[in-house]
View 1 (cartoon, rainbow, N blue to C red):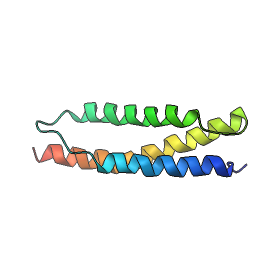
View 2: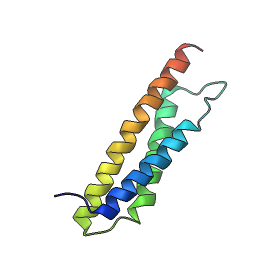
View 3: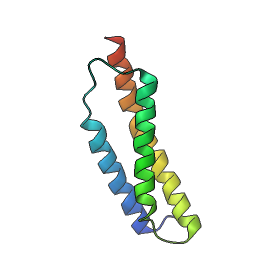
View 4: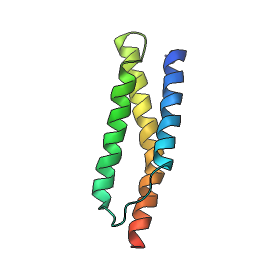
Length: 92
């Protein structure tokens, strides 16, 4: 069963906003451990999920599926950022 268009639009908006957030990050000097950055990114993902949870429409099952998809997409977007951060740490 396909997601409702309103939820697809919210997922798309959330992904765009999350991407902007990641692109705005400046790596700290001195750097924090990679595990701490992973925790920070996980916190950002959870923040976005909680924010968009209130805006999802449809029945409970539809909303949960949309939130799962949003979480998967945000995790996918965060993977290259975390890889870039790990590479930054190797050069430090």
